[in-house]
Length: 402
Image (cartoon, rainbow, N blue to C red; front, side, top):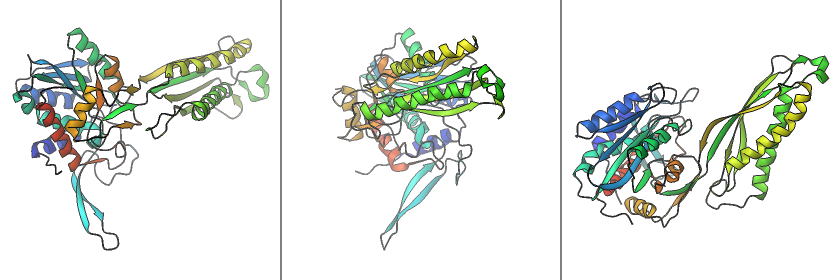
């Protein structure tokens, strides 16, 4: 089947990619653009802000007065590109034909790609939704469509929680949600959770010749890191496999470790950051409870030397795992719209679990591949964008969800 991408969708995708909405920055340029675009069509947007009003979510209903319908969900923030080796400007949103083939007499053909940070993850999905907003408004479908564009997904899915709380306050009860993360337009029905924490260790400093009078924060932290490693090995060895995931068991890992000021000073402070990625059938909060229990037992001995020594834990983010079924009506809808008989599982976290935990049946399906996301020279093929446009136009014409 051939797919054709509209000029308007490509232009809007390029426009959004050229906006620098790295999570450390404000996303208001993109949100204001989307709000104004929808206002030009007579659609009112509802914005919910972060504490200092530098970032916002946008929620808009296209087809007011119709039955509650399907959320089209995307996040507006991107990861940074510092230190990556890009061959194009990450904000250029350039379209290039990438040569393929050409080996041993094979024909060379070109695959047009849109390059830029967020092209795959996941501004193009938002752009195509906006480009087809008028089609949703003019549709004879009995269902409304809701646009839900969030902030700070990349750093912990913080914005979407505020948006869902506001939806509940407003009495909005959508029938389903499609999260447009890059799945190569194959509906995804499961992903692992992502739970990240920081552990700060307070010891007691001393000259390194007087170690019995001290509590070495690095060494105490290392014991907990060792426990975390033991847990990870236990998941790999003992946990029932979940077929379909690249890594079919839960994982645990340390991402950062800091501590110490000099070779001859027993360190008073240390800090490390770690994560659990739990299968949908596992329980990351129970994993965290086990680790904290181990730290508490170590802490008892530390306090005998220094009463104020010990461990403190801080939650960085808790993104729940996601699990639905191939038989769920929203999954079957996504398969029909994508012209796909398959479903898939994805390794990365999304907002899908948060929507589902709020009682909204959800599926993940969007253009591009996660293999290109977060990478230098991130791209999405125009063929994938065209498939996404056909998908969303099909959604606009949907008469039933079954």
